[in-house]
Length: 119
Image 1 (cartoon, rainbow, N blue to C red):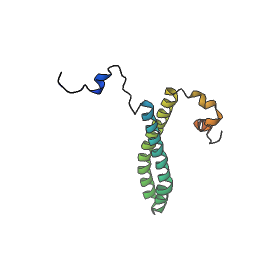
Image 2: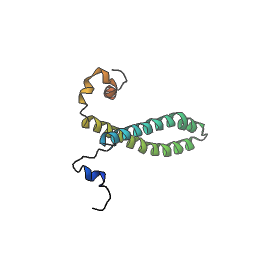
Image 3: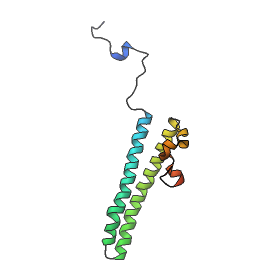
Image 4: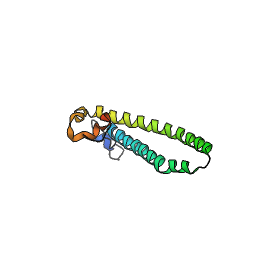
């Protein structure tokens, strides 16, 4: 014996290690992050960018500027929309939450289906 105490994993070799971060936690964090980015970018475009485009005097400048920004925003919006959908769908499947789409208490999970925000 070397004189040092055995390490913790050696004391309980059959113990399953639990991680504080599991797949659902990562999916939820990703989901929240991309929704915040998506909504934040829409707010930026409508409150900052569109008024700035209106302030440009030459119509040709407006078109070029708007098309450049819209191209970049469009890519970001598509990526965040797809990631939000995939992470949300993953959580529904992984946690077997399909019954919530039928429940009035979880109306917010199905608002996108009807195109409105009411139950």
